[in-house]
Length: 246
Image (cartoon, rainbow, N blue to C red):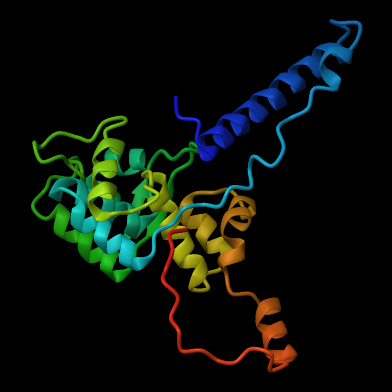
């Protein structure tokens, strides 16, 4: 069993969500007079600090190494994720009809929230998808395996793990990290958090603010740095730090 810190954190986060639902059901039963006391669960506490883990995203250099290490069919899928922020299941289900070459958008018909959305592509993303759909009928899948079959559930992690090893991506990433990479890149380039939330399919900006807000250039940060100036304690250096994985 994997007992790494991140895995333990995810388990505890899941337990907290289950506890919240269970407490709500029990409290409702108590209000309805189905039980005499709520002492048995009222003091049950949740795990602390399980939702504060730092998200893993890839640098541009890591992205290039990773995609180069992928087999051709899987590289196409990984590239699609990096250029759209779409989830694995959303990409696997995407058909040619979901691509609008005029608007430069991809339609996600069934997202995690259950609501459809349209993802705006960059010119690079539009050109990439346009090449994939050439001469394909409207109902054909955009992303296919090398044997011509669809990508199905849980077929993504094994080739991604192998590509991470070959590309020396350490720590290795999962497919969802490609979505984090997409959102982080937008945030660090000043895209409004509301726009990022719309692209990812979130109903509001709360999740985006929680995970990516610290990456976004802010009015407060710019103002403080411009106004405070320097004491002159630290001499400028031309030493370039070695990039580390996030």
